[in-house]
Length: 91
Image (cartoon, rainbow, N blue to C red; front, side, top):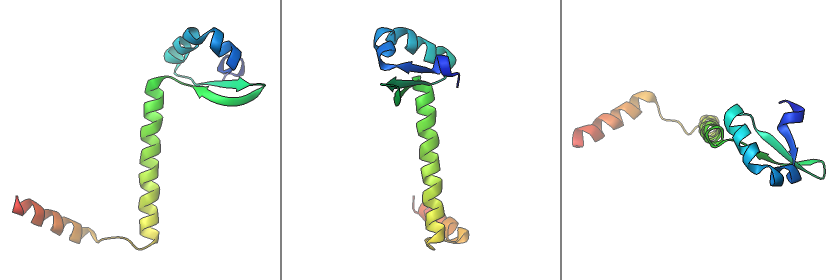
């Protein structure tokens, strides 16, 4: 993060919204928006936001899977494939 370019005040955002949107779209770097000198939000391009959301959802699924393993909520692989074969055979 380049501090001078990637941190902007809410006043700057209000005055130069189109320019900041163009900048995040071109650089794909998020901009931290401050209010009274404190970070309050982040402006980022939509594609980066979507990628981040997908990554977070994947991490959540991994964490849920790990919790299931720790809690013993598992099914042996052979049983899973047997269930799938039976389902496919019924169709």
